[in-house]
Image (cartoon, rainbow, N blue to C red):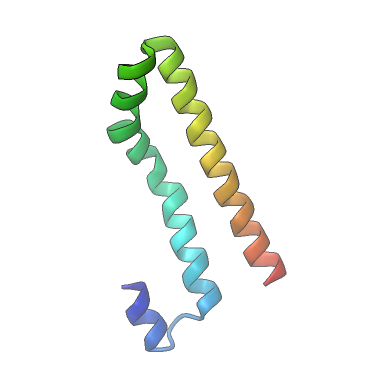
Length: 75
C-alpha cells in the first residue's frame, strides 16, 4: 500500500518512511503480547521473562521513536 501511494506521488519518500516506522511503533504492543510473551516467559519464567520482555519492547520503541524524530527534523 505504501508503495502504491509512493509511486502515485501521493506521499513523499520521507512521509512513507515516517508512516511505516510509526506503524511499527504502534503495532509493537500487539507483537509483544502475541509473540514475545510466550517466548520470554517460557525461557526465563514469569517474573524475569516479563521484565526482559518489557525492557526489550521499551528499547525497541525508544529506538524507533528516536528514528522518527531524526527523520522528521533532520531529513
